[in-house]
Amino acid sequence: MAAQLIDGKAIAQEVRAEVKREVADWVAEGHDAPGLATVLVGDDPASALYVGNKQKASAEVGIQGFDHRLPQDAPHDEVEGILRDLATDPRVSGILLQLPTPPQVDGAVLAAQIPPGKDVDGLTPLSAGLLAQGRRGLRPCTPSGIMELLRRHDVPIQGAEAVVVGRSDLVGRPVSALLLAANATVTVCHSKTRDLGEVCRRADILVAAVGRPGLVKGEWIKPGATVIDVGSPKGDVEFEAAAERAGLITPVPGGVGPMTIAMLLRNTLLAARAAAEEPVGAGWS
Ligand code: NAP
Picture 1 (cartoon, rainbow, N blue to C red):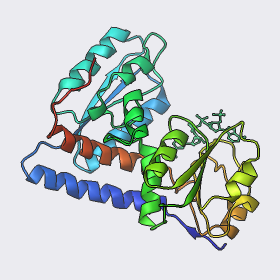
Picture 2 (picture 1 turned 45 degrees about the vertical axis):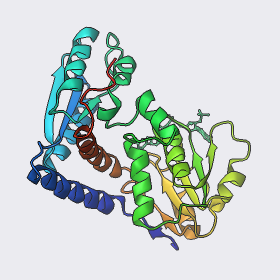
Picture 3 (picture 1 turned 60 degrees about the horizontal axis):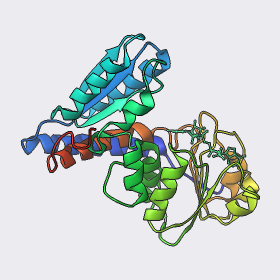
Picture 4 (picture 1 turned 90 degrees about the horizontal axis):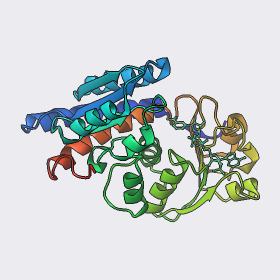
């Protein structure tokens, strides 16, 4: 294997340790600890596990947890009421509505009403718009985790050819916007891209976020390129063959995956700092 591995697990631990130190400094300056509110409707075990992991990780770095759990038959209005209260609660820096919600609760509508200053997932249309326009805002966690992996390895981004395979709201689109904001020349590929291999061969930085194991062939990797494989639980990149050509590559698991919660913690701290400058709850309509 020629490529150096990008150890996302170790980098995520570094980020978490930094957030912990910065939270302690923030509190020592006389501020309340940042607060992360999670809202889970129903009893889906996977969702309960995700929410539990986020609250546990928050507690480990000194972030206060506000863990709201509602029954499977909770009405839409009740969930909306809780989210409204959280939007104006000064102890709450960030709000997460765990999706999907049961059918009587319109999760997409409710999530879109989270004020951008508390949107620590960075996925509401408002946050996406701020990112698209390069304006200040909270960025989605997995894409900002990818940028952190690149930065910690000093990967040159300015002027680089970046190819992103996938254009989802969750990963592909926002990571493309972040790469563009960092002055890469960005090409976004999707299921209708005519010759995916030819486009990938140009990439100094290749991000694969598709969900189709082995879609990206090793022979498509430009020698020395940086390869970020977001595919989960199996990678989108032919790892062994790609690692023969790449300069840097993320493993799956242990690459991008661990970064998501680390960046959520950082977003919660950033939200608390921003809220100290701006009115709490601004943006709730
Ligand atoms: P998604 O919403 O299903 O989007 C997949 C994208 O891939 C779409 O834009 C689709 O194109 C494109 N695509 C599908 N087939 C293609 C093909 N043959 N050639 C080129 N592009 C193709 O998926 P997602 O939510 O972005 O997730 C992508 C992967 O990342 C999944 O494996 C997911 O589990 C993983 N993921 C990991 C993390 C993490 O590690 N923390 C976080 C989020 C997601 P169209 O737009 O044309 O349909």
